[in-house]
Amino acid sequence: MLQVLLNRPYKQAVALRLSGRQPDAPLPSGGGFEKVLQQALFTALGRIALLKAAASGPQVEFATHLMRVLALSHEARQQATDFYASGRQARTDVLSLASQLVRHTGMQHDLLTQFLKSLGEAAQLDGKPGFPERILLRDVGEVCGFTKQEVYNLCLAGIALENPGCRGGELDRAYATLQLSPGADARQIKQAYRRLAAIYHPDKVQLRGDSASTLQITAGQFTDLQQAYELLRGARKMRA
Image 1 (cartoon, rainbow, N blue to C red):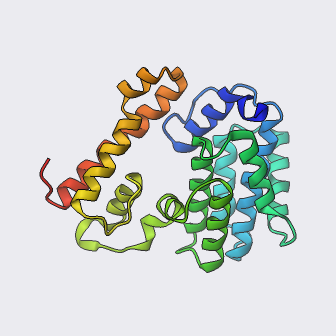
Image 2 (image 1 turned 180 degrees about the vertical axis):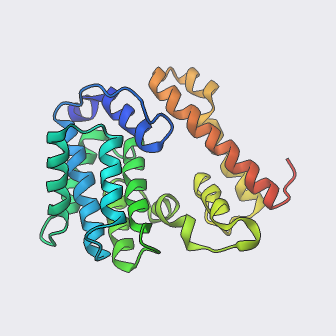
């Protein structure tokens, strides 16, 4: 429990940076948690590269991009590179590192969501993820407390269904934002939006007495929900 409570400002700042909502969010010291995060993230990225047989190119560029997002020092970059190389060795236990990350964040922390999304993005860089990458994403997601459906929504929804007549990838992301499968009907879309809006609406967050940092995060999430709902409402010709 103590590990979950430590370094909260750092965890919140990293989540904001990884999500792209505040790419320049100030990063306080994360103490020993910084290594826990970096080891879990870059080792998993290395494993994805191994599964995709991609030693260089887009995979390495993406890992380098995340090093910049996390504002790693020269020394920390070298260590992250070592973690990446370790992930490319089949004997390295990626899931135990993900489990260690969970012990420091708590289940389904916003940072875990961004962690899993980053892995999903890496799995798609060189084309549609194959079966081994999907299994890895599912297993890591399960360790992080996500259901199979949630892993699909976070990592795979944007590529799993093609719908060229309806801005396919954009619609798939909208369904994923509302935590729905692409086949959801109008009633399910409305119910999902109302349920999530009740959680992330800024007024609801303020009533709960959450911190200013949490308010910033949920405000961005609420905006995403609104945009996703309006996109689906227009595409499905739903009444307000």
